[in-house]
Amino acid sequence: MKDSLARTGDQIRKSTREEYESAMNDFIETIGNIDYQSVTLEHGEYYRQACLDKGNKPATVVKKLSEIKAIFQTAVVRRQLEENPLKYIKMPKQSQSNIHTFRNGECRRLIKSAQDYIQERNSQTTLKWDLLILINLSTAMRRGELLNCIWGDIDFEEQTIEITPKQDTPETWHWLIKDTDRRTLPLTDGLTQLLINHQTRQPEGYPYVFVPPARYDLIQQKYRAQGDWKYSDSRLKVVRNFEKQFKLILKRAHVKKGTFHDLRKTAICNWFVEGLREYEVMKLAGHSDFRTTHKYYLAVVDNLKDRAREVIDRGLCKKLVQIGARRV
Image 1 (cartoon, one colour):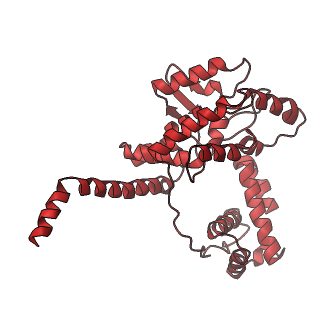
Image 2: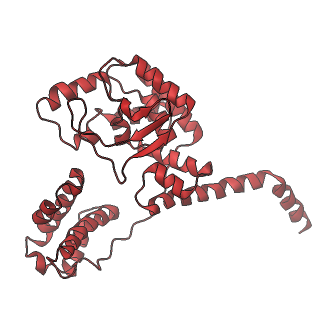
């Protein structure tokens, strides 16, 4: 495992390396630190059951097995193994989770709740939640993409936001894009104006669009200055208590369930509802796997069936059915 990751180097993200290492260490702890050439399919099956017995969800076990299997496959490619011992491992069955999205009324209440939330707090320490939610619902940007967006990524004249990796500089911290490379997303006149208004209210010298000035100062002057800022922090610690704040906004908006990531799901589904094709949605959403995009398409198709059924039941067909029922 150590040899594999060392030879792979920075060809994969640091966070991915950490996940692979964690999964393989768990595998080793379960089956023993044996010679890798003596690992068999039975070891994989034993590990699979051990994970399930510990209470790991099927999806978690699938993820672990896939990462371990990938390391062994790399050994095959490098001719360290003749065959992947987990080549024929069967993954635990997992139920297909529904794609949860917010309804139009819920979206409006969320934005209003976010506006009320930030008005009660110091603008220098509080995330601009209403604009963040609105941009997410319009562009389907991931949380990390939003929080690592800088003003230089926005072209106000062309009305676009470019998703770009960030270099480790005195002003910005290292951050990489998930799945795909750069992509450019469109903005409307209204969104562009809201961003312009937000920029004019920001003090000079703060490059990040959504990182509150006080939080940026803390990251720069304390964490980064003292060397206490890791790559994973660019995804997890940019804004303190992010999930807790969003849950509070949900509660105040009287929205019973949902996550911040569900805003992205809502945007993607809305693109399909408005007629964008699967390839177009795949490029805009930054999906590396077409199957991911297709899941959203299927979810929208199912939703369209339900809505079409409601329309049919309210319209001419309902009257015709009633006439037909009387004749029967």
